[in-house]
Length: 158
Ligand SMILES: Cc1cc2nc3c(=O)[nH]c(=O)nc-3n(C[C@H](O)[C@H](O)[C@H](O)COP(=O)(O)O)c2cc1C
View 1 (cartoon, protein in one colour):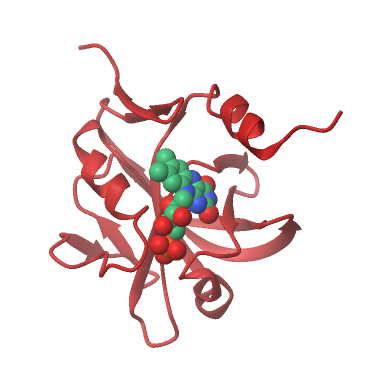
View 2 (cartoon, rainbow, N blue to C red):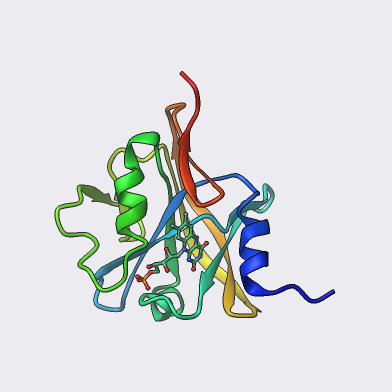
């Protein structure tokens, strides 16, 4: 059954997700990042996650160059970060408070959780690349995630 891209996007939008900002760096150590919800836990032993990255993102080369990335889980107060890291052609980290993790990649202040990864495998996924990260460190706290559903942001009821 053939399905056109607009309809597919519409169907996929019915799958509710959290929102992450994936951060990485280039060879000089300059930070890069993008908003992403194509993220999944993959394996506990060994500890693995996967992300799917569009081949057209500005930081595409960074993943293979640095072989490190961090998945930052956004909290309900960070919708502005989701919008910012999904905007092309801006200095995404200007004025954004963050720490630098063990692997030299930004951990965004206020995120609900972080997963620091070493890139161990990549697979072609059509117009995206599937990256498998081996978890080097992880932490999480808080209970107020930012949610994404049918193209809009939501929060859990209080
Ligand atoms: C909620 C949301 C989820 C997204 N998920 C992904 C994703 O999983 N993978 C991806 O490559 N782009 C995803 N995007 C799009 C990128 O964030 C966007 O294209 C971004 O501008 C790419 O980074 P660049 O500006 O450095 O090219 C998502 C955008 C939004 C708003």
